[in-house]
Image (cartoon, rainbow, N blue to C red; front, side):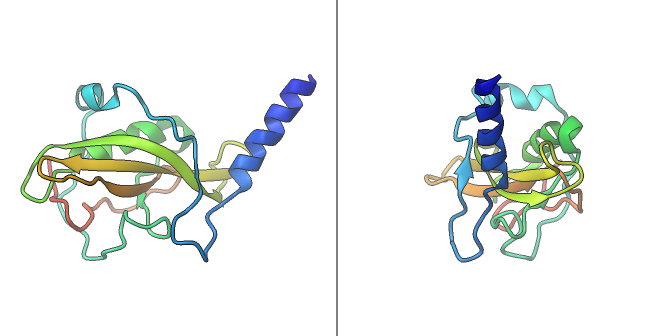
Length: 155
């Protein structure tokens, strides 16, 4: 019982720590990756249809303006994969991605513990791209899906 209480305090502490507005890089949690996701994701879920590229240079690249795929606890992870599977590099190259962490706690009625949600952070690369780009994805709120600047719309 005592061990479970400390575990609960630890989880709540992680979820309530958010991104400070004065910091450039948000605090990241859960830095484990999803092994095998890149190899099987394209066959595991069908991609969304993303037809347009955003004109906002912060779209997807900032915790303040994440891609909003929606789905909540039940379909949020699937929606993230569907979105990422729809993206292509600037010349239509296939991309690879890896979940890096979660960050930036915020209040939402769809959240898991204490109505708190977190953004997921992905590192995305394509052929010819040496350094991955970082994308922020919100699975608790939906919105119009666009490709971030530097990507091409696909599917």
